[in-house]
Image (cartoon, rainbow, N blue to C red):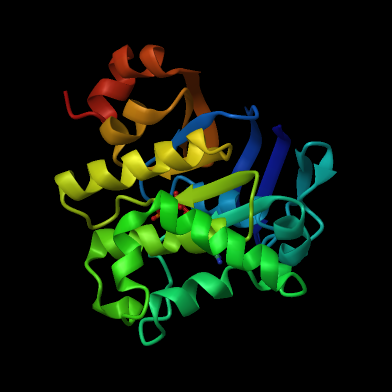
Length: 235
Ligand code: ATP
């Protein structure tokens, strides 16, 4: 499981995350709700090893994630799918996917197997495998970004704002894909502003405001919480 204890992250004198406590159990989809600037990306960057915390801890199945070595975190089962997808638009879909397997570069047979597995999870990408990633629709590009993260064979996927800029129907397709990924055995921590869609597939969630966890609960409790409904569900 992912265990985050009393985590604080600062940028100079500015405290971006303050005393964060959260967990993701094996097999769960956990959503992290928060407005722009709440600290979601900072948390993900920290869990990916890109940002060192000023205090506190974060472990995945007991392995510390805060050593500041992203490749160590990926090798130990934690992969991030970044906000904005960050694909290489001129490279083919398949080349983008293969880049996600960099950490397993000494195991080409394993990478070939993983490639077939992600094409099974994302069948729409099969016919696009030779197309430049930048030529795909926004929803398809998001699928490529998620599939690329899976090529690292993570046990925990950190998924940052996958619905960004997508039409509602496409968001639905992306979230269905996230459920398939989860059903295939990958635990998911999902940062989202689209609370309605995210809570629809999550088991539990946390609300992050101003760098602090201000609310947490099971899917149904958050869906029916008045503060969540007015701030994030627009009802
Ligand atoms: P968004 O959805 O807009 O990305 P977020 O919830 O992911 O928002 P963060 O990007 O984690 O939020 O930012 C949290 C706070 O930290 C913000 O106030 C932001 O301005 C600040 N911040 C982020 N990165 C840096 C940095 N490199 N230097 C200084 N401040 C930063």
